[in-house]
Length: 297
Length: 269
Ligand SMILES: Nc1ncnc2c1ncn2[C@@H]1O[C@H](COP(=O)(O)OP(=O)(O)O)[C@@H](O)[C@H]1O
Ligand SMILES: [Mg+2]
Image (tube, rainbow over all chains, first blue to last red; front, side, top):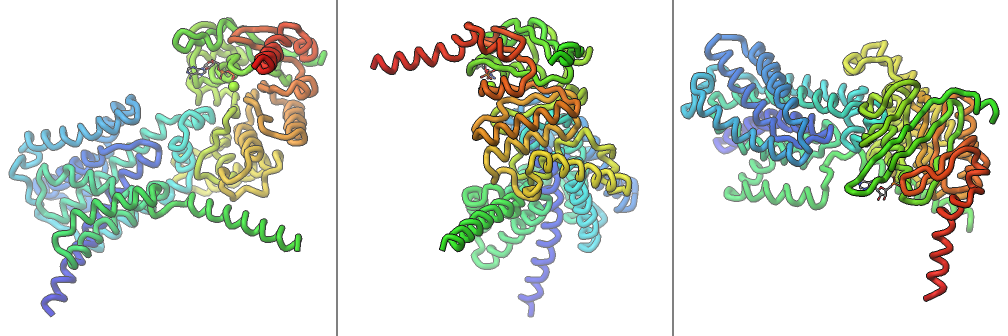
C-alpha cells in the first residue's frame, strides 16, 4: 500500500514536469519550425521564472497575473535577442544562443537583488496540476491556430527554403522575428510553470538541463508539427522515471541512448506529417502496379 | 509581332555586372523585355542566364549596372519587395518545399494574393476564413490550368519531375505576377509535354503576363518566343527576332561550335 502511494506521488510529479517541459519544447519548436536552431528558450525561461517568482513573492500578485507578466517578459527578451541574433548565419546563431545560456546563468548569479543569486529564491505559491494543464492546452491551441494560418504556411516555406519563400513575397526576417516572440512568450510561461512547480529556483534551475531537455524532446517528438514537441516532452520526461523504477542507475544512460536511437532511426521525430504523405504515395504506386497486373492478366 | 514591338519596355537590364570571385558570370549585359511579350533567354550552359534571373529577382545583387522594372529600380531591393512589384519565377532545379502538399505549395505562392492579415488569419476571423477559401479556390484554379488539380492533396516531392515543374509554374502564378521568369521550364520533358508548356506560356501572355524564359530547345524558341536575347560568357551575343538570332553565325558557333569540337575530339581518340 505504501509502495503504491509512493508510485502515485512519483507519477504525479512526472506529469507536472512533463507539462513544464512541454512549454520548453514548444518554445524551441516555435523557432525551429521557421528554420532557426536556438537555445535561447533557456534565457526566456529564466526571465519568466524570476519575474514570476518576484511578482508573487515581492509584490504579492496573483499567480495568473504572474504568468501573464512572465509571458510578456519572455517575449520582450526575445525581441531583443531576435534583433541581434537574426543578423547571424544559422550555425553561428546556434552557437551564440548557447553562449547566451552561459551568460544568462552568470548574470543571474550576479544580480542577487533580482534572482537571489547563489541562494536562489523561494517561491511561496504553487499551482495545481489542473491549472497547468489548462495553460498548456491554451498554449497548444495557439500553436494549432498558427499551424493552420498564413503564418504557419509561410513559416514552413521559410524553414524549407528561405530564398524561395522570399521570391514569393514572404519576408524570412519577419517570420523568424515573430517566431522568436512566440518562443519567448512560451519559454517565459514555461519558466514560470517550473518556478511554481519547484517552489524554489536558482540560476542553476535555468541552465544546461533545460537546454538538453528541450532539444531532446523536440528531436524525439519531431519538429514538423506542434504535436511533436508535446509528445516528445511527455516521453522524454516519463521514460527515465519509468526506467528508474526498473533499474535505478540507468536514468541518464537511457536518456542518451533513446536520443541517439531516435536520431538514427527517426531523424524527423515520432510525429512526422511528411511520412504519412510518403506512405500514401507508396501505397498509390503499389495499387497502380496491382491494377496494371490485373488488367494484364 | 508588330503589336509587341510597339509595346513599352517592362524590364530593362542596363550594363549589369555580377562577379563571382574573379569571374564575371554576367559581364555588362544590356537586355530589354517588352510588355506582353514572350522573351527567350538563350545561350550555352554557364552563359549566365540563371545568374541574370537571380539578379532580377533579388536573390543576387548586381556589382554594377541597373535593372528597371516598370520604372522602378530593382538593384537594391529585397526579393520579397521585388515579388511585391509583380515578378515571380521558377527554378532550373525544381525547388518545391519538402513536406508540403501540391495545394499547399501553390497556396504559399498565393501569399501576396491574400487579403487577410497574419493576425486575423491566426484568430480565424470569419473574414479571414472566407479569404482563405477564396485563395484556395484561386490555387485550385491554377492547378487546373497546369493540369495538376488531381494531385492537390499529394506530397509534391512524390510526383514526377515534369509534374513538379508544372506545379512550380502554378506556384509562381499564385500572386498574379506581371512578369514571370521561367528557368528552363521544359528541361527533362518530352516533346508533347514541352509543347504543352509552350501553349500554356502563350495562354498566359494572352492573359496579360509578360514572360522571360530560358529555353534550350530552338524549335520551341522559334515557335513560342516573340523576341530573344542570346548570352555567351555573361555577355550579349545577339538579340531580336528568334529566327534571325538562331541563324546568326556567332550564335551557331556558341551553341554548336563546341559540340563540333567535342565530336572532333572524340573522333581523335
Ligand atoms: N553562386 C555562385 N558562386 C560562384 N559561381 C557561380 C555562382 N552561380 C553561378 N556561378 C558561375 O557563373 C557562371 C554562370 O552560371 P549560370 O548563371 O548558372 O549559367 P547558365 O544558367 O547560363 O547555365 C558559371 O560559370 C557558374 O559556374
Ligand atoms: Mg541555368
